[in-house]
Every structure is written in C-alpha cells, then in structure tokens.
Image (cartoon, helix red, strand yellow):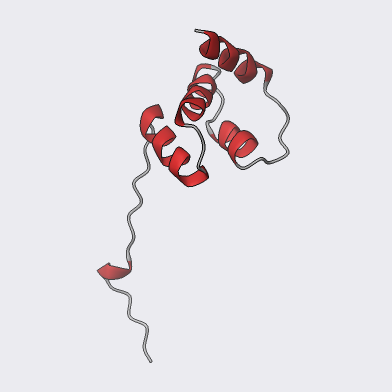
Length: 80
C-alpha cells in the first residue's frame, strides 16, 4: 500500500488570540467555568505573562510556581 500525501492530509487548526474565544475553547476542552478561565487569561495578559502559564498551572494542573503578579491581578478582576 502506498501512502499518498494530498491536500486532504492537511489539517488547519484555528488558533485564536482573543481572550473570549480562547476561554470558550478551553472551557469546552477542560470542562471548566468559562468566567474563571476568562479572568485567568486576562490576568496573564495584564501581567505580561504568557497565557500558557494559566493553562498549564490551573487547567492542566502542572507543578508550576505561582506568579504573584497574575495572582494579584486575578484577585482584582474577581472583585471588580
């Protein structure tokens, strides 16, 4: 059997950078509250920290040290 590479083999992934679209996708993927995810992503952006920090630490539950800036901004957004 011969494996042929054709245009049908190409998969296009839509990668979004806006917070709301990312929050929706992540909420579906991790079955998590969308508002919490949205606040976490926004806190990362405001702290100039990659959004992967929030995803890895809080959604994937990886052992990553707390970023105090993100933590403080997240609390402010929660109260706000």
